[in-house]
Image (spheres, each protein chain N blue to C red):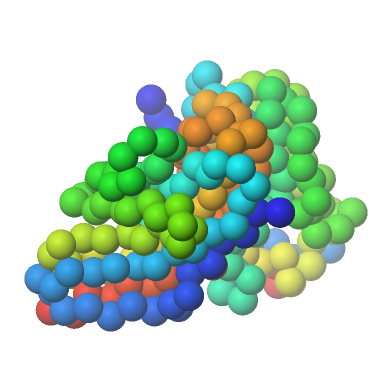
Length: 114
Length: 113
C-alpha cells in the first residue's frame, strides 16, 4: 500500500489567499484525522472523520478553516483567507476505524503564509 | 477527558546505554496506548501499542513499553540506544470507546555517540 498521500508537500502563499490541502487515506481505513504541528503549540488535532462524517471539529481554529470528506478516499482542508499564523506543517492520518487501531500518518504539507 | 503527559521535554543518553522516555495518561475506562516516533521533516511513525494482556509490549526497532495501571504510566524503553534513535517521541491514548486520539507534547531524544 502507498500509505497516506498528501499534496502538496510544500505550499507558499500570500496572506489572504485561499489554500487547499489534500489527503488520500489508506484504502479501507474508515477514520481520518487532520493535525497541525508547530514548534510553539506542538501537535494539534483539527478535525476527525469517521465513515466520512465529521465527529469532532472542536480543534478547528476558526471559521477560516474548513474540512470535507466527500468520499472514503479523499479529504480536503481549506483555509480561506490564510494568515501568517497559519504557517505550520499539516498532517493527515488514517486509521482502520474506531477501536484499538493505530494511526498512519502522511508525510505532511509544510505551509508558509507570507 | 483524556490527557497525556510527557514530563521531559528532552532526554539525553549515551549510545549503548538504556533509554527511557516517560509517559503518564488519564482516561475514563481502559486505555489504548501508543508510541510514535517522528524523524526530522517526516510524519509520525507508529512504534508500538498496548491494548490488553501482557503489560510489556514490544515494538519496532527494539523498543518496548511497560504498561502500569496503578501508576497510569506507559514508559518507552530500549536496552541499548543507537545514535539513529535520536528523534521526537510521542505518547498517545485512546479510550476504549475508540474515539479520539490524544497525543502528548512529545519528548526529544538525543543519543550521543
